Length: 214
Image (cartoon, rainbow, N blue to C red; front, side, top):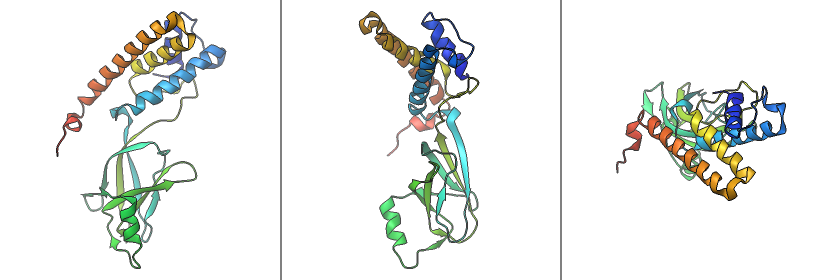
């Protein structure tokens, strides 16, 4: 669903006239803010299939810190693989990495461990690898990557639309202060049910992630 369609769906539920552009009125711009706030909350509520992607970095000999371009420091890592050696990388703590690199001669070779270490000047997550790469390796990060705020009317979002629209509607009802909050409470209940239903449907695509093992 695109930004303008989502805003108009909320406006219609509020018995307001639909707009041709989100900037048409101050109120439609406010609803636009609620849509972005709601999109963010929905994106953060679950590891949605629609937000899953693979980020690839290619190592160079002697370099152990890399930028994950496009992440904007807002990802969940699902798995990390070394496509060159057909193996998985394992997460280690920053302290563990510090210990390895305090050595006067840190081990070199194919990376088998990773840890996050800082953010680039443009806001992307940076990651350390160990052993220090001794050549070219293709490292793949399978992640859930949240999206930036919607700006243009035609900007699309990929998470389920109904929870986003219903949550934005609840925020709008709350802002109006209708029915001393009773109507707002009902709207939030409907929004939460829409979100729970959407999560349940999406979770069926990855049932193994809901099974706990020791």
